[in-house]
Length: 523
Length: 89
Image (cartoon, rainbow over all chains, first blue to last red):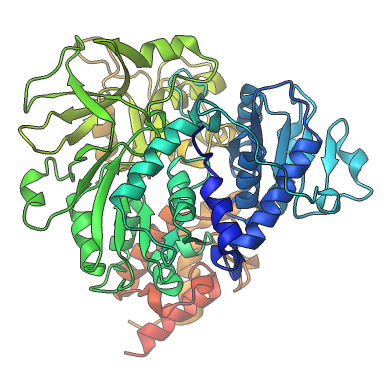
């Protein structure tokens, strides 16, 4: 039996209950206190368990002590957690909850106001757990759902639930090109393989203080929490305000481990907050989630010269990160391509294969699509055999995940270099977006077929937003944007909608995205 | 260049007129404590644009470390910071 994702956390809680585990705003929770909250949630979940559906429980919460206690509680109860972002449109959260088949949902106080519209028209009755609110006298308000408030929480810590390595630790949803988000269930075995490599690679200790910049619906947040709690370290959450001044947050919190999308480094560079040696406490500067521009890496290291900078790479389907590149002030300039830091070498037992369109291996130094194989690769998409069969292929008896990322195959001993996407997936400030999903939503709202979305404006690491073109001049752009904001997360809503009598096509008869981007360039 | 807090605040309000009206607030009704971020008027991307615009308009460099985190996105404190910086040099 492999240890569960939360095992180390509870071991630290038993051995060193007074060590700090989590900082949110002015609140510090010790391992002991967080473990008590998590155990109460786990006991409550078990008390109200139906055991009919899949072993998954939803968490509707955002960077609150309750959000983290809920994740640990769900894991302790033997379920995988399904994080839902209270800032996402209710319809999107509802669809995720239904696709996951959850029977219970844990809600923090900050998310309670968005719950009502999430539940509208939901296809099932839920057990709603409010660990930081009372529900006395309000049970009827939530009918037909069953509610449990803070005073009804279970007390006794349950026995460690038995789980199999193949059981889901978490289920996340990524943007889907057909318009429907795809579920990715990551097993305990998948995430254990990653965390064991992390333990081997980094010298994290209980004195480390980790940043928590990633939203809980983004798998990189699993690193924030569990790389820290495996080591007995403390997770430090910035407030939304802190994220506007991350430099102040790093200094105030005395962070030793920084992990974020490169967009935050670029943002700080733009605001001139990467001042020389301004982050003396940082030991590790880690970036992941989108291409890392060389200029961002260099500027960051000026601010944190005492830290080691690494660029990690990995899609959700291969669990958090599966290749890594360590920046070297002498060597790295020469190894970079297109102004981007290489993505390096496979972690641990992961292996990479660079292939051409025919799925045959590319020659040394040639560009092709990156395929991933190994213990971190998930079995497929949640309840979606068709999409799974397109993205997961068998080559010489090994199962590979097709990333859709274009890379240059390493020459003898050299690193893999990221070159871009082979399809219409982009990164908007680190968020993975299938432009097809945005286009499908626009087609649905307008009834117009000729619709193209592009990443705009471009940023050194991807795009800062999205612009859309619709071939119908009668569409009202403001009304369209408002309608899209009700169904898509903010980063997927176009910042600009342009109406054209018709859209340009290229020689292959496809929409000419390049010509449309030039139109935007012209202003 | 010289400018009063009220001048700077007018400049900021002019920049955010559309999103401000979309939230149903008239520019004249915006109190000094109005938080551009929390009220949903701008996001972090908008902050970068706004800071850039302020720096260009008034020819100064805004240093986030000189502002309390809470004051960064509040229209009154942000405006008076810019005015103070302008008049103090």
